[in-house]
Image (tube, rainbow, N blue to C red; front, side, top):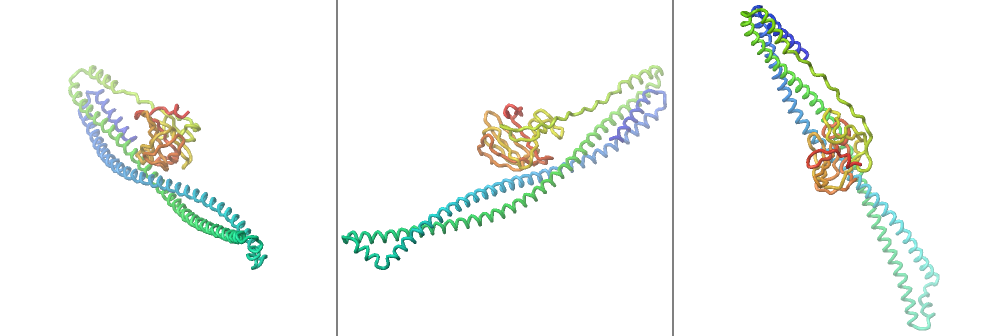
Length: 413
């Protein structure tokens, strides 16, 4: 760009010189016109080449963007599955603790039953084999003696049955405990595998995101070059038209008075002056700590509503930086109406709150709710991430009414 601007300035200087001195020979405008035509052809060839490169990079960028979407979705799914596995492990641990407590209670009861039976057996042994006969003879009536013998047999049989039942219950508890321990071992192995897979997916996603950033930079560079070359080509075409007009005027002005030709040249030269616009400097908003009751997340506010995003775009919501994996909460009751990847937003979740209001949660690492799920205010609906090629873990939050972004400050108080 810097090499082409002096070329235009030089050619424009030739134009002024041609207008200011109409008495010179006609070969000067012809010469400058030929040089401008050659420069125009060079700019057009470069413009065509840069446009082809830009289209090629645009195609590559689209492919990598789709690959990044796939990587984001895999990371989100793996995060959710890992979370479910850890939840099952916690539930199994609680069940195991309850079974161990129940077994301890049964073992204590079994010990008491065994002691009772042992005392009964010792008493029976102490009386000897004639104990039933003694009990029978000690009664005045035969019916009473028969009742005593029946009662003794019933007591012994009942205690033996209770001991057998307790032993059976203990065996069942041991079997359940063994099954839970085996399942915990399997879940622990699964969790380790899932964490390894998630780590590999994270690396793949970061690689895709970095490649997308590189392609985006190349694409922006080619697009800016294409725009600059387009402006240069347009300027050269205008200059060429002016040079041709100047040559025609020079031929007619040669037959006019020298004073009138000079005045016309000064007037034309004055009309071409322009003032270059001054560059603007974007203001940088301070990073504030936000969060608390009603907020979807606590963290550093990178961009507020109506402010400027880190990439220079205007913000229609809030960009809040936080640690990766931090839970994101629903700001109000509602129903999940969208939960998947979207270009520019990564893994995106949208909740319909009724009355035309919807809240958007973007760049997540995992979506914890499915479409159609009813959520309450404060429910965890996603986790903080950097999906969609975002540079750092952060939540982009929007509140919309009838499809238009609105300031969410009143909802977050």
